[in-house]
Amino acid sequence: MALSMDSDRLHEECGVFGIYDFDGNDVASTIYYGLFALQHRGQESCGIAVSDTKGPKGKVISQKGMGLVNEVFTQESFEGMKGDIGVGHVRYSTAGASTRENAQPLVLNYVKGTLGLAHNGNLINANELREDLAYTGAIFQTTIDSEVIAYHIARERLNTHTVEDAVCRAAKKLKGAFSLVVMSPRKLIGARDPFGFKPLCIGKRENAYILASETCALETIGAEFVRDVLPGEVVTITPEGMKSDTSLCLPREQEARCIFEYIYFARPDSRIDGVSVYAARIRAGRFLAIDSPVEADLVVGVPESGNAAALGYAMESGIPYGNAFVKNGYVGRTFIKPKQSSRESSVRIKLNVLSDAVRGKRVIMIDDSIVRGTTSGRIVRMLRESGAAEVHVRISSPPFLWPCYFGTDIPEQKQLIACSRTVEEIRQVIGADTLGYLKIDRLSEMSEGLPICKGCFTGKYPMEPPAEDIRGDFER
Image (cartoon, rainbow, N blue to C red; front, side, top):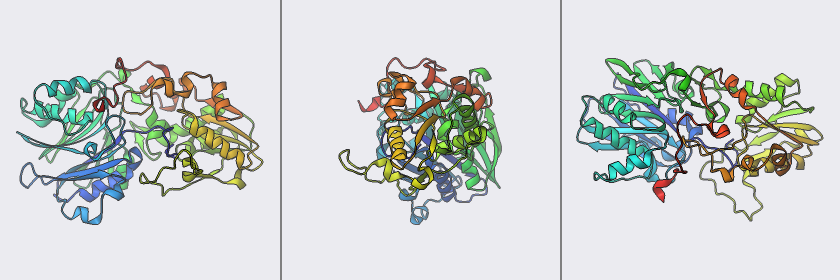
């Protein structure tokens, strides 16, 4: 879904990565490659912070900046980044402006030493927590809720024996979605919110332990998957071993993973909580073929996230699967967006249609979602201009009817095309011959029965949502 350069697409908030090498090897370059594998989770900014557990306590070397991982870091970047423990982060902003100050990891120097923190998710009580800190003299350097988390961990650390106890106590105050990787001078800590909105897994490579948003990052650096961090779990990694605190865990039926990890966010080669992302997308396509069949000559996916669902549709329907699009993989975040008045469509710059593949054919086009509808309309028009006889659109998620407050930038209701229109009216707006969405009751089957959050489709959230949209509140 990252094919267009306009705002009619969803974005994940972040990817996190942490590593502790017990043999004392430098980890900065490994974090770089881990972040490279997680780049799809955020392309606005990135950063790495490392520390030497055998060196002076509290010395953290960090570098962060705006742009892609290979834009921010060079070979020279790693010459001075010596350390055997570290955290990394890639960011897309859903709360807090896209500025260098808001890039992570955050590094905090305080009475007990240092903290390096990388956070994926969105808190719904960040305003109250921030106000609480502000009235006791806290001065904020950023406008992101991750800094609020870091401050609360530091504050709790003053009253606890260990940093992991401080993380647990701070986590009890947090409402919303969070997967955290925290680096202290001698420990690497991972924490996941009790609902399990955001993924976090544990890996091992020789004598080093890794925490990462997705298993694809483990495979990229040659690490083996150990297990997922449980929803509500806090894990502490030291040379003495790995310690687990499950005091915040909820009964399994109350967990609520973000279903969009399986529909779009995660890389297809990842497994999240034991479920293959690729297999989940294949199932979604099969369900679309069963529930919304149509006669056609070709099934195509909108790259990249529509491809696996398109293959599933083709497998179930018997209609041939093919490629209709050529994607320009070299358009990074430094791409100069065309003005509205110019002839260059931002969709066309990232995506072109293979006219020879679609000319004269009835085409089924599979995409993962429709937000505002503008991008879907442009792609349908491009297929028609390239000679497609018919264009049938199938969407591997239900219609968006409600915003998300937990780290996905689904906009407010008035901007959601499905909120004020029927499926038939949406079909007319995007110019398709037919339109079908994935049925809501298929989501549980798609995720193999894992407890999931469906709030953006149903308006029923796993916790009470804020009374008003608080996303980006710190800028107001």
